[in-house]
Structures are given as C-alpha cells and as structure tokens.
Image (cartoon, rainbow, N blue to C red; front, side, top):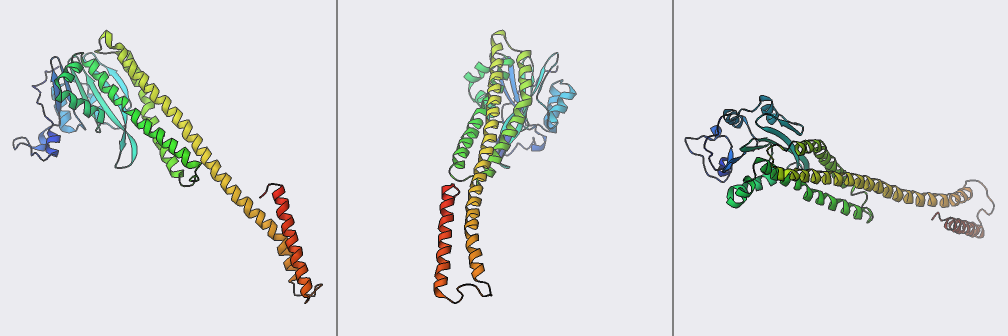
Length: 334
C-alpha cells in the first residue's frame, strides 16, 4: 500500500465558507476536501460528501478494492462490515433530521480502518462526527487519548457518539407522544390527526434506519479488527445501545398505534353523541309534526274554526312532547 503524503492540516471548505478566498495556485475546483488529524502511529482522515476529486485522491494514496469505492459513491447502500487482508470497510446509517424537508432521513457513514489510519466518508453532515473531529483537532489531550489506543478504539468512539446521538431524538419523539395523548382527551382529536400521522412517519423512518444496522453492529462486534483485547467489551456496549434504541422504537410504535386507535374512538364517540341527539330530536318532533299536519289539512276536521279546539291540540302536543322527553330520559337516550 502506498504511504500517505505529509498531511496538511486545515479545512479548505470551511475556510472558504467564512469568506477566505482559496490560494490562486490552488483553484477551488482542483482542491479535494480532505481533512486530516494526525498523532504518532495513527491518522484520522475525514472526507465529507466525497466527489470525484476526493475519489481520485483516495485511489492515488490507498489501494482499496474497486467495489468499496463503488459502495462509497452509490446511494442506498445497506449497512455492512467487509474484511480484507490489510483493512476493514464499514458502512453504517444514522438518523438525521433534515430541516429543509422537515423529516427524518438516513445519513450514511462509510469508513476504512487500517493498521495506522481511520478514514470516514459521511455523505451528509453528521453532527457528532464533526464535533468529535473538531475536538481531536483542537485539543492534544483528546487526540492522545483517542489515538493512543489504536484505530479500533477510535472507530468505537466515532460509532458510539453517532449511536448515542439517537437518544435525544427519541426523547423528543416521546415528548411528542405524551403531548398527543393529552390533546386527545382535551377535545382536540380532530386537529391532531395530522400530528399523529407525522409522528408515525418519523417512527417508521427511524425503524427503517435502525433495523438493518443491527446486523452490521453485531458483525462489527464479532470481528474486533484492530481492537486490543482489553477493548473488546466496548463494541458490545455499542450493540447494547443500539438494541435499546430498537426497543424504544418498538415501544413508540405500539404507543402511536394505540393513540391512533384511541383518537379514532374519541372521534367516533363524539360523532355518535351528536347523531344520538339529532335522532332523538327528530323522533320527538315527528309525532308533533304529524298532529300539526293532520289538523292543518285543507279538509273539514273536528273543531275547525274553534279557538278552544286549537288550545286543546296545543295541549295535546305539549303533553306528547313532555311524555316522549321523559321516556327518553328514563332510557338514557338523552
């Protein structure tokens, strides 16, 4: 495998984003976005959103399998762990909330692990990864602690931070479910149908990310490539955390389905109450309408033209109304 050239510290993309123009002899289109943090015996190379320039740089400096390069630049790659004679290739997915579209998507992290290097290639910005990289770059003590135990421990720390970042998302999701439960019984059941649907979609997307990764993390735990014997339990901790995430998602799935069923029951019960009242009014008014229709026909009827007969009819109708209302109240229909 060719040796790496002397690493150049710096983040060209971020420097340009702050308004610092690139050097004239290094046009932006010809400068690969490669960031390197180095310690004795180990390098961490981070390439965010790799493109053709970054691929050319990797192919020039490393002898990776061409299928791995295809996996890095392909979309919708399943999580997996591939082992080779002199390096290990890992593909993992982590949840990331995309504010532009307002939904939860998967951010893919591809990683090459060798005896003296760790290369991370996220296809989207992953906040825990960026934060850890900045800490390693800014603080020598953090760099010595993470890099001093070899590439296996650095890989563990990267994956562990990215997995742990799911727990705050799950807590927010749990808070949403609690608020939805309160809104259902406060009379807002019709208005929260869309909210329930949105939370349900978030849970489905989260499960689609975590489910295939469970197998990859178990494979990563079994391989323990470039991991010292006293660090073997660390990858088991990652697997346990991922299983806790899956258990929480299973619980949330059951909760949101129960909330959806409860909300539908509340709406149905409210509609039934309205229909019961309207039906009772119709049944009560129907006999009165019948009596009024009979005495309003354009034919001779008993008491026609008699004022006393009119009041008798009115009293009969009032008595019928009172009797029917009393009967309905007795049967708990009103």
